[in-house]
Amino acid sequence: MSVEGVGAAGPLPRGRHGLSREQVESSQYQRLCSAVLEAVGELGYAATTVADIVSRAQVARRTFYAVFGGKDECFAAAYDLAVGKALDQLRDTVTGMVGVSFADRVRISFEIYLRVLAAQPAAARALYVETMAAGPGLVAHRARVHRRFAEYIIAVVRIGVRDGELAAEPDPELIDMLLGGIDDRVRSCLNERDASHLPELASLFTRTAIAISRPPA
Image (cartoon, rainbow, N blue to C red; front, side):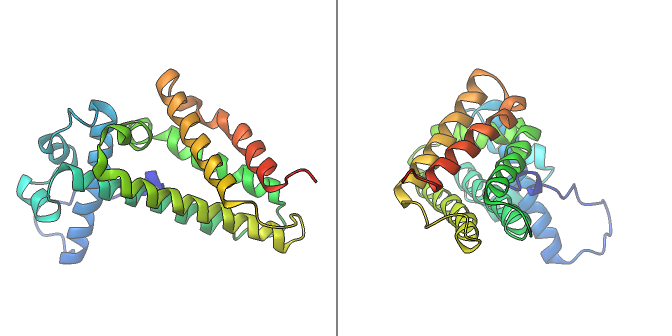
């Protein structure tokens, strides 16, 4: 996620800008992905229209349809892009740390991720709440993202095993349960409180992940 990485590019300058066709298309794609997350997070999935998306992205309607077949396809692409960027950022930052304990590595992972979500409440709501209303078309995307999160956790655990802090990798089904619990707690926080409270969940997530990784003898 990073979520903050989606839509980092602003509108293209007017007139001659010297950008290549690939740079223009990349900017448009990222702006559309950012715009659909903002629109869905603020308006709700059902209420969001293509007109809402293109107006926020500052691109022409014909440009939207040159890239995506419709709202569903755009939202699915934004979902994949946002979570993929977040996991890439975590992997690059956390797994590359030297001299950091397993517990601290887990804590830092959750702190970074939850801060990114808290900084962009509309995107957080789109990713965790409105995906539930997006229908069966997003089921495969959610399952794939779930697997990518599991792979990241396993990568962190393997560092703990390598460094002698953990005896072995945890049962994959327990990691599944952890990820389901994280989704539920994030969703509840967004529904019952607001995104600014998400970083408060880092301690709970850290304790749970450590307990799963270090089962009692």
